[in-house]
Image (cartoon, rainbow, N blue to C red; front, side, top):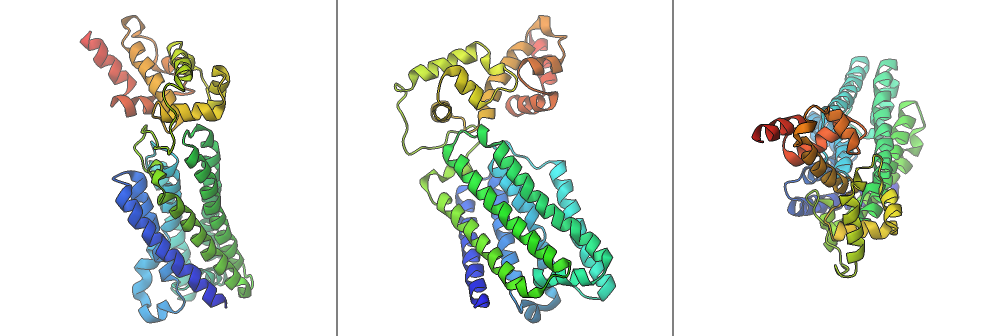
Length: 370
């Protein structure tokens, strides 16, 4: 019975991830989110295939490269989820360092097991962590950070999803991110609980329950994602930054013209330069319901993210101020603070993304042309 359910969930999930990879490859374009999505799907398919019971007996040690690839999966899942909710997402040195550290601990765990027992771990996760737990304290010492990293991924994804939820102007994506990230995080925590149980000598009798739960979560995640990807509004997942999401029903410009005029006046009066300005504060200042403000900025002004909307106006104001000859000695940091940024780093990044050069470079070029 357990084996039947496991196979149903496993192969249904494999079919779902293969179909998702095809859709994302077709519709996602050349975006980083699309590339990460396809890679993540392929790595999950590989993971589901590699740990089919009895496969090692058929394939032997040629499975080693495939097992190594499987361990990269959590890193790509993490990066893919981050890229879905940040239109300006880029893989940084910090992301690479975290990924390398994770893979390093995985490799060290396998080497410690081999040094202690002469065994190469090529079997299921249940057996893998049971072997690591019985191989001695050194393998446990390397396995524990691997599990902590996976738990940290779950926590970080939840934090990013919830902290950035208020900035998202696309209502469909706001709902999606909450459910999707919560489910992905639950899958990570379920996996960590299962692997920790086996690592520290837990009874293998519970392994079938954990396995079925894990594959069930995998299937649920991909079904939920396919539900959204196959809808006509699916382009909000991979659209170009700053592009408006296509909504099934759009209000006429006439209906919203007074609210648009209010927003325009707010921008002209530099109200969008207030430090710490949030969508809720702007809604209060404009006397608009927050959900209506989100819709207007998204539908009529073409922004998918509130930060993009603010950055557009703030960088325009920055360009104007950087071109003022009498302000040529005003520090860039002072200007950034006046424009609503809490520190220099976010201002420099936002400016370079929109102007193609740093504020200092722009000031020199503009003043030289005067």
